View (cartoon, rainbow, N blue to C red):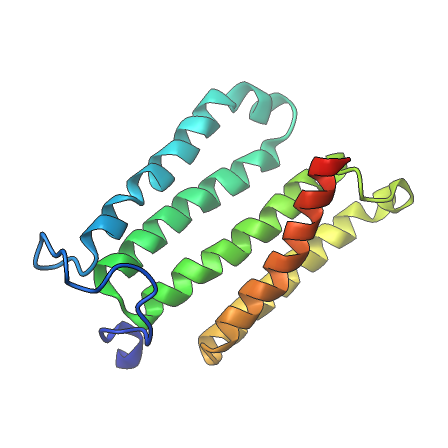
Length: 165
């Protein structure tokens, strides 16, 4: 259990650890502070959309809360630089990608209308696969990067297709 909370997740992705240290308990001060908008802005967006969320699509609140969670997870990771923080930070991105897909799929152009009656099954499948990958990533942390790519590449293709149609 202690390996999850030890310093160093294995690779410094961002600023040099402790190079610009302002506070003794924060490893990457700049990266830690730049996560504050990621925490606050989705909550403000949800507040501005509350009438739409209440009357049209209550599931829209899920991605907003996940974005806030990602900001918190990223803040924790950049403050501590431990493996647990890295996994939670990256897995929250996988959950965000998949929950955006689950929430917005009814309005996406690429989704065939003939599968509309199976929308609930599709959504449940995406959630179960995401949960399965999340569990596997904690058992074998190197799978985290694979999971992130596995979900990010198709999401990027969908975004490109939606934007060009």
